[in-house]
Amino acid sequence: MRELRGKGWRVLGYFVWMLGAGVLLDSDDGAAGRLLLTGGAALFAVGVWQSARRPAGDAQ
Amino acid sequence: MSRPLFALFNLGLILGAAFVGMRLYWRDHPDGADIKGSRLLSARVRAWYFSNLEPFEELLVRRRVRPIALTYLQVVGSVVCAWAYASGLIFTAGFLVLFTGTLDILDGKIARRINGDSLRGAFLDSVMDRYAEFVTYVGLMVFFGAGWRVWMVLLAILGGMMVSYTRARAEGLGLRCEIGWLQRPERFVLLGFGSIFSSIAVHLLGVGHALLVTTIVLLAFLSNATAVQRIVYVSRELARTPHA
Image (cartoon, rainbow over all chains, first blue to last red; front, side):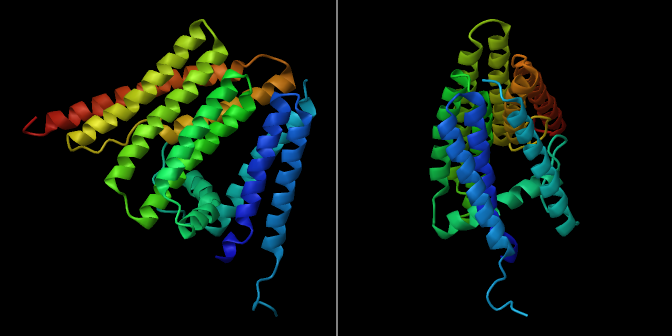
């Protein structure tokens, strides 16, 4: 399960980013596109942070 | 508005994430997985993609989400995808093709984990898949409007249906028939990435959707070729059996 830590957030963040990229590239609706890009980047960052965090009981 | 730099950045992000993700996964899993691959989507690529779905699979199983709910969500997503194609939102539509295809993978995985492969679920899943695929192509037909490209979409629809029908008929006669170049995962990967890269090419090169048209032509011919492969295979197998 350690391997899955934060992975869901990273994949979700990537998906949301790509959705935002689609909105921005396909239409001129910059606000919605930027909102999705920011949300995607934030979710990805949460995933990276969770992956890097040392699990409880794993302290050296 | 043309956004060549942003398009280039996202092209790098798609290719880079896939390259790095696969390298890291294969480094940690050098033996591969017990997954059946094909010429276009190897077992190793499939194993990497499935590994990205594991957290969602765990969550959905834990929340006891019924697989049929994902099947219906796939149909709803395909309707939105068709609307995106019809509105000319090609990148978004390609993304939704990949998303709905992923839902199709997830519902099967969850069904196997929570209650085995129920016959009702398998039946509804394959029927809904056909509706989802058809609706997506209808959106593409609206996008192309008229001319030979619409005929290519119709040919792709026929090919997709025949690939499915030949397998169903063969299974009805007691034969397994999972052969051919373009089965459903290959079709949605081809259409999804074809649409996304076509949209990026429009921003980078300022040309029309030539890549999307090429993708549709490929889908039209290769899916029908797959149906022919299956017809030949099943005919040969049946000719070998003494009671045929």
